[in-house]
Length: 121
Image (cartoon, rainbow, N blue to C red):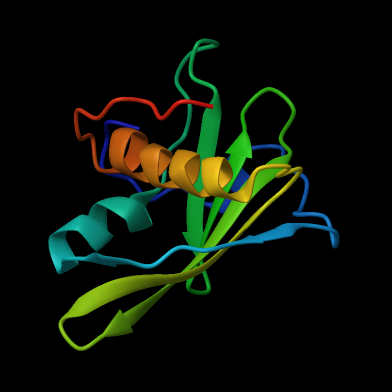
């Protein structure tokens, strides 16, 4: 979403994270400027854009755009002057290490607009 408008849950047809999910080992610190970008989320603008993301109640929710299924949920809380990603969960995560790496990739590439390589899956 290029407008700088914050994505909301109601911006996309989505389904919630299932009760059965995998907890991922993550811990990452973000600056206030980075967190502001993360909190904006992301609304897809074309069919080639595969993700919808919104931030609500200290949780970053990332959904597949076509199915609306919640694939990742991450808890981000303020710690001093920074923001810390302290917990994360994934839907259908047979390999938790790969799922954690892909979640961090999505945050970096999609929300922070960093030029990063996609991890091997």
